[in-house]
Length: 186
Image (cartoon, rainbow, N blue to C red):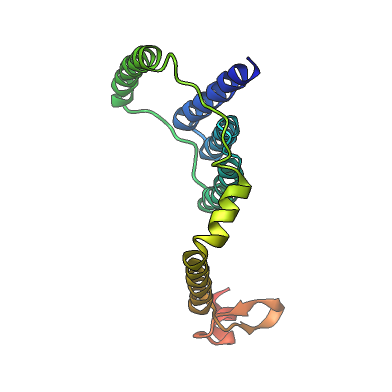
């Protein structure tokens, strides 16, 4: 009974957060609502006994990817969206009517086809089983992927590195410019 309550809590949080991402006019708040959606989905993964997937989901998506999204949003200084178009009203009504149809279909097929479907407890998605498979059966592909990622990271560092020259007031000039050009531009 507790699992069923938690399922509905996480499901409502995920759907509400996803709805907020789509309709909120502020991009930074939309990104934070996406984090809420990611955490709700991680809770669903825990209920499905896929603990490793839940941990990776939070670490990769809610952690790293969302930090990059927020960094880009703050860097670009994206303004709040304004909806002045007459087409917006038509799209809103069409979207709401299509959403009602979608939820009616989901309800119909969900209650008709999955009345006796239950998740049985298993150890397939646990960290221990994934670790055993990763470091025994798939150790060579794992090592090749790690070397490939290491080479890609080193290549990105090499391509992005620029030699800088320190000029007056502690400012840096790119390698192609002279210190005097940087000072004149200011």
